[in-house]
Image (cartoon, rainbow, N blue to C red):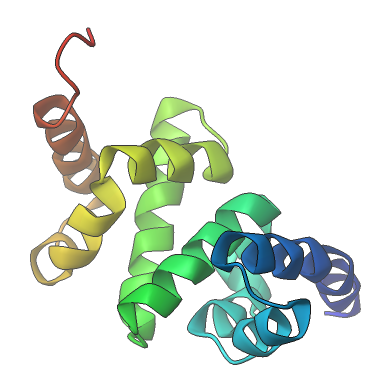
Length: 142
């Protein structure tokens, strides 16, 4: 646990900096938002493995949380689980998988379809994400 706390201390600062930049707010306000967020509660729990994500991806997730006003911990944990599961299948880091899914709108898809998706096994979750990505590819992209 002590090693995780040390890691959090080192890596929280870049998240706060990026959040301040993304939201055009002071670092003090960003710090308050970070420590009061659901994301921080997950980040503080080593078993969620959120520390695998880059500070940019975490700041982006936090910004999304603040915009949505969501405080549903189950949804956040499930989205992280889906990102990690998809990333493992595609040999992508958690951060790279998150960016790919976010850019395609799949993070919103996963969150909005939580009630159905959370009942599926890993293979069906990945299949659904692949189907979403295949059906929502920009025109002209192979």
